[in-house]
Image 1: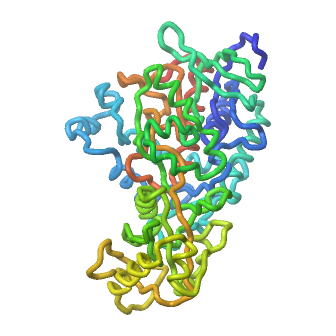
Image 2: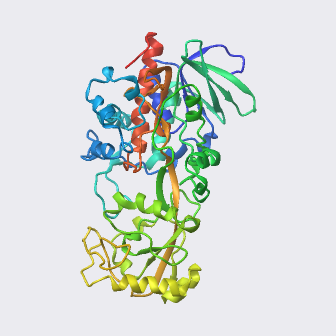
Image 3: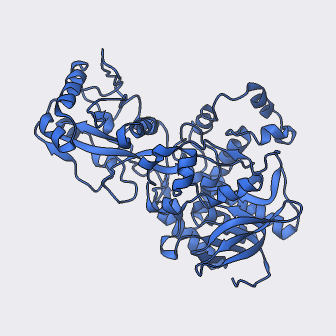
Length: 493
């Protein structure tokens, strides 16, 4: 695309992860001309999607998991105004603008997400992708998850190949910086900075923002999450490319915010490892201590897939955002335990608690006292690691609700754990067609969003929905934008 080129593209997509690629391919299949701007070089395209296993909260290719909508509803926001929420019982067209732009996970969007999930999964299989119930890193679970063979990288490669075959233009090492808007407020393109460092205008009938969250921006992380974000880092290399411009440029032009801007999806990882997603999910069978040698959280309040995020947030609150899981030889009785240990770094081992404490640079007396108190709160019981057993401690704080067995059988081992930032929660409000909603509740003409750019999560992540959200709303955005461009009829809700 030359700097002086005056043509107008039908659909301009910002970002090349699952959201952007889904939008681009869907729009091109619908007959639109499409171009993608991607900050990364071609060998690193794909954003966070490239590095994830891409599990999806489905019970089959055609149906979302049984708890899909209820989990979103339970975590739709903070203390929401019941009078405003009650107005969502009416048809969406009759919602007042203040409700359409309200910062919460509204039922209209969740319903559209759930309804389009099955068709989107079937659409993905048309590119040769195979989905199944592959093993997850969670040894105990409360819901169903499917994933693509080959993980997120397979999604990126399949959709990128389809886009290239269909004639979608790719422009790598190119960053969108701001939206172009006409006199009536419609989005008509972007300004972008290319690999030569020069800034240029790119015109389009519609723009789809699929450029990720702001986990790669230390400035936005500090502004929204706070100064302790110094102790966070993206869970994989792709997150470093997500610097939040897509969200920022839309907010500058009147988009309504949505999602929990002060929060993020937390995952426990080994800080010693540089591999993507070096997760540690084995802490249910031991205890977590901070650098002072004290326990600070119930390590096993439920199945690990339902509780690891809240536990990881507690780790983030500790000194330097760091904790250690302490285990004894009983952990070797856990079937398939290596599924829950994704780090490439070895456990730190010792024959005694005193020696382990010294290796971890934890005060030995403090750790010994913590373990003695914990062991005193345990009682004999069979060890059944693959199901929550309700075997809890008594008389100690914090309690441990499941798998409360003494740590008394050496050799002892430990892993350091920090909170990683898988993706940020804050983003833009969209409607069921993935159109970005303005602060007055009306869609912004010509502007769509999908993936992490869309704010949908509050407090607790609805697990195994982020990649699916990118695919679903990317496809919806691409189809809607293509219809708008090819029929010259604006689509509205």
